[in-house]
Image (tube, rainbow, N blue to C red):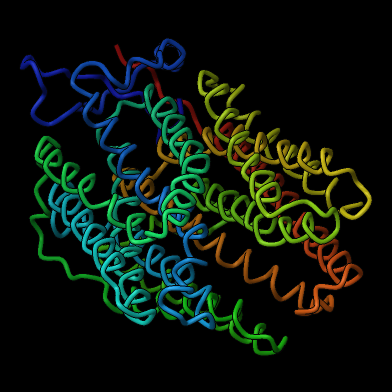
Length: 504
């Protein structure tokens, strides 16, 4: 068993419902018994021993955010026809993304300041307030402000959900819980466009935002059942400077996707990278940190794992950014067909996560590497002949990418929680959504720079789209390649760690 790893001894309170969830001692078990316990975990186990409410709450919290992501793209055309502001069409998504990244980064500081229960409930209230403001917005300007509020609350909810998985569930159940979270995203990818389309077709786009409010209010009431974890007893400061820097960096990334001049895009991305780097550097000396120690150091297991997550996010953001356009222009499919072809990635990701969630030990480590190799095969195959491949083959390759992400991501996240530095398990878990979101933001903006350089214009000529798509996918294929190399390094680091002496 590794130095930082131990399957902790379970202490179940004698009360009918444990007042503080599962408690973990510090006495390690042997590796063989830990793996046996992990392999014995069943799908019903996250719903037993007083954990059912927590499992449902976590998935509802994540599901609200996920549904909103998929609904907004469907209702925005109706919003623009009603409120105007077509020039700000993409800003509703962009501002939500910026705010949600800041929210995920603020998750750990909020938990330290307010405690998990209060922080979770407050984040849900902010999300509900943003949803109601979107539904009531009389103008596009106010809708954009409301979307930012909504994104901020959603981001904190996502970060605290990941933290609570580390806090509330024993190690042998975490993969099952993470697989359920992945299933929630898959269901949202299926239901979101349909729900949004239903409200848009009825001419009542505001209903797509109103449906969040009663669900969130019930969610807040359920928060009182969470274990009461008091805020930190020590006097700690809120990381306003770090969050301000990160906000500037993420905003620069978002703006890079809006400008048309190549050098302006490159300059904004460079400024964004610098702002993120300064944020992480300042965070390491803070008493209320957003990230674990050395979060991007390739000499540390957690830093290496974070690079795999970042590059994995780049992989699917590149596909999401330009594959729908390529399929519509190059293969003549409808908007709906192109959208659901991209959704195939999310579904295969979910299925792969659930099918591999029972794997543990060396097999799980191999799955991390094999998953990234599948991503390379899928994305590389699309890059080689995006214009010549049949539509069905492109969808199949996209499914291969999704299967690779699902096979790798689940085990990588669980291993990151398990091998986090002592005392940083919750911080490591809470930072994962921020790491992923930054990868998505930089990946999408980078794809825009590449497409711009390749000559993509508003005319959307066949030759221009074919060339830009091939450039984006070809350069984008470097992401799974480097992710696979980082995954190999991560697995070797874990294997090289000294084993702990089994306790009696």
